[in-house]
Length: 476
Image 1 (cartoon, rainbow, N blue to C red):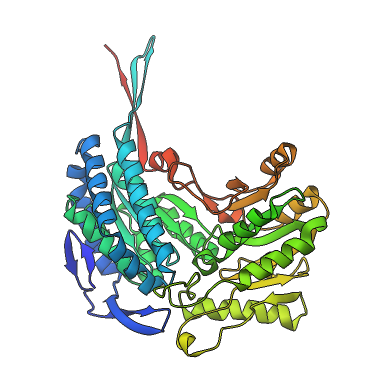
Image 2: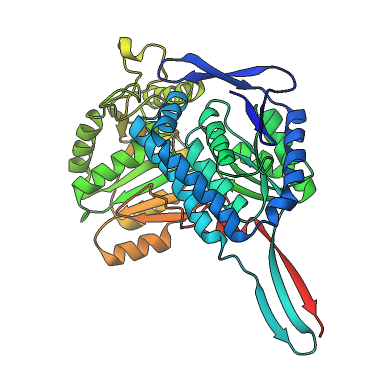
């Protein structure tokens, strides 16, 4: 598949390509161009040329294009979900949810676009004060491989609705669905040059996006250290930067929680997308009086997860996306064993058998008795491994939960309104769930505190981040 610049499908100027693997088998099934800074420059030129006409289209007209695109995505959601499973690895059912989530996001910003307006005040001695909200210009986006379609929607929805044009770099291991979605939007009436996709490495294309002087805003989702580099690269041109980075989300289960619901919440919150979600449950804190029973129920439920190729019927967890992530997860669990940092209750290794040969599989894993300094509690574990820690009180749970450099999401499971209030006030996170975890509707702002990022995706907040204020004083 080729990349998309100025409405046309094109190869990289170098002629080089990147192989795209199916993580279920480790086999190559497609290639995309290995773009470079020169290709990125062509895309920026196209976006610059398209900006004036797109930004002057009526708000309603821009929203109509997003609605039409969303409608076509829904019509083709089965085909798109199969493609997403093939390149990313997640089960087909999860891929279908993600594609529909992309459409939801476009529809939300399509509905919001017509409500954009500035402010007015009559100021004695000065005249009439108008504050217009105008688009920034050309914006850049760098997205990861774990939720490529959904996160693409989070970035292009508000940017395009606000009247900006965009250059986007999809992840090298999962670019195909994003390219296909961009093509669908073009067919739905999005003019050439408004949305351009350049494939390539983060070191070349990603850094070129952050550094290019004509790009006025960069939105990045990915690892913390890379996010810091993006911010540094963007600083000389005083670009706006939105960073949605890593997380180590705590889940607190109080003594009065519905255990069955909490177990299901932990399983979905941790093992959805093979644990490759920034806001996945990554640290589980359970009150001591229910810890044994909860852990027993959890271990039994995790043992029932069916691992395999995401296109196979009955599979509830697919492979990890790539060899690097698999090796990292295996090393983290090996460290736990080598240092005797806990007990592996289930999983803890790569599954064996002909069905798993060549793929990047890791068994869903539960570990108990983890000490405070274990890598499972101190670093982000981006895969299907869940540590369980018994705590004596909500105060102890909150202290554990906040003992991290991250602050993306967190959840508390209880029926006690006092405990809910204490937890919601005490958890240092950008998003707190009560008796649920992981769900992020497009209508609410999402992002983190501390090293989990800057500013917010989704909601009206994201739309505002793609607009500039221009003050006009009129003296009659």
